[in-house]
Length: 108
Length: 121
Image 1 (cartoon, rainbow over the protein chains, first blue to last red):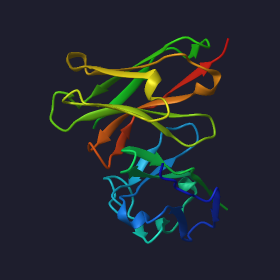
Image 2 (cartoon, chains in turn red, blue):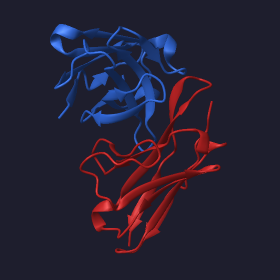
Image 3 (tube, each protein chain N blue to C red):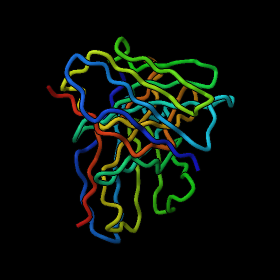
């Protein structure tokens, strides 16, 4: 099945920009969705179809997808952004959704 | 605002069958295009898609657990039920009910709060 690769952890200072990547073979041909999960809570969709934001998600969150890497960018990072972030795509070969292993964002 | 809530046992014994119910609001599985599914997440690990059911009773199952899963719906009660047979300690996880967007190229825009199921004798 299709494999999505995420770095286990990313650290960023408050006010700076965090970039969380999701690697996959020719991922640019797929739609990538991103979820934020804070400790003890259910995941929340923050980006869908590569770069669309659900209502209620701050415009500090943005997404892009090119080549073999999709990127979730969080601008002006706040302490409240500290969470695990998961990418997800649809694997057209297996006909199943697939999640990346997740990246823990730490706000220094 | 769509809401989903999971219910079921918090503890099951190995080899038993797990039955989980998802009760949802502001959503109808009799409406074209609507889907509800299940995702689980073992402690400290990534989510894993399990199954989905759609308004037309189309059912989809994740490949790794397909033989152990059954998903059904009760449209009149706004409920979806997932059964998983032959439970094992490795099935210990938080189980989430989700609203499924799309039939293919799907994603999940609403999640229930989740229910932790522990498998232990």
